[in-house]
Amino acid sequence: MKRYQFVFTVLAIVPLLSFQPPGELRFRKQMIASESNETVGVFDVNGDQQLDIVSGSYWYEGPLFLKRHFIGNVQRVGEYYDDFSTIPMDVNGDGNMDFVTGGWFDETLRWRENPGDNKEWRLNDIVKTGNIETTRAWDVDGDGFQEIVPNTPNKPLAFYTLQRDGNGKATGQFSKTQVAETHGHGLGFGDINGDGRNDFIISKGWLEAPEDRKNKPWKLHADFEFGSASIPVIVADVNRDGLNDLIVGQGHNYGLDWYQQKREGKTITFIKHVIDPYNSQYHTMEWVNIDSDGEMELVTGHRYRAHNGNDPGDNNVPALYYFKWNGESFTKNVISYGSFGEGKGTGVFFTIADLHKTGRNDIIVAGKDGLCVFFNLGSE
Image 1 (cartoon, rainbow, N blue to C red):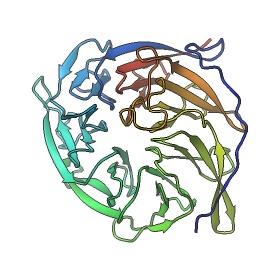
Image 2 (tube, rainbow, N blue to C red):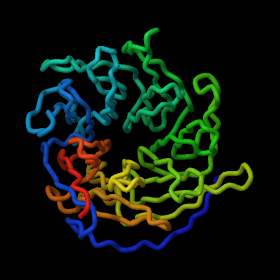
Image 3 (cartoon, rainbow, N blue to C red):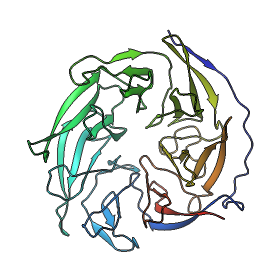
Image 4 (cartoon, rainbow, N blue to C red):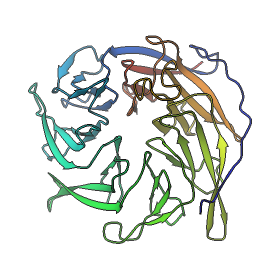
């Protein structure tokens, strides 16, 4: 039986402006490419101690990101490139950073091998998984290394562990651990019940992590139903009461909400609070300190043409926001908003990183509306 309540909080109406008023964060937008790939990662590709931008068929050399290098062709299906994540990982242990990706149409988890020179990057299959909405990396088993976790709606939920030799060197091989026989659209990871072990959040509940996460069953708690939930679902103590809450976007509809965790003995319930019901396609998000005040903010936005114009609000103008917790609710701040070519959406996998070592986090976003960087200039 579902155990959640719906409590709607009042939203302050924020004008949709393309600039920030005095005292708010300022950003400098730099267009990198007009490619329509929807994923972007950031890591040092060539070992020069500068962060580079990696998206689709190309990587862009830092610190200026003007010179681009060919990685390899990516399968095109309709309006999509079949490439829905860019997770940095030295898969074969050769010291060069590779990346892990996966696609909806070819239903395969893969990694691209960084050759260390200007040659094409070899594409290596890991496993056939079924349709991959996108992929994330989390340390599931608590050994200090990240596992790969694809969101594969209507297929089993599983994580993939990169195998290492006796010296801790990556071998290029992965082992599979299945967590659930099926799951839906949406995926999160974090400690719900406070036992020190991170749990999985899926669209129809949360899966409690056992002590032995690779060999014991994960228990499903069907405490909510989120529909076409975001990837990730954020797990964070929003109101600072010592209990982890959930932040959920609707990936293919309108809605952005947070679910307050409540406890009565060992019984866990969630109360829904609305953050923003007026925008659609909140498909992906990050929980990060964007304004350098030591507190975390929610960075997310509209995934432009997520389903090629077929979802509610799919053709709304591209937009990118950060939401700041004010002690009672979230305040919406505009980073970018405007018609195609002016505003910018999130794509399906974006990255936040301090590209130029300024001490401020920048936002790097790809999508059907192009690839660009929002350099964080701080506040006045």
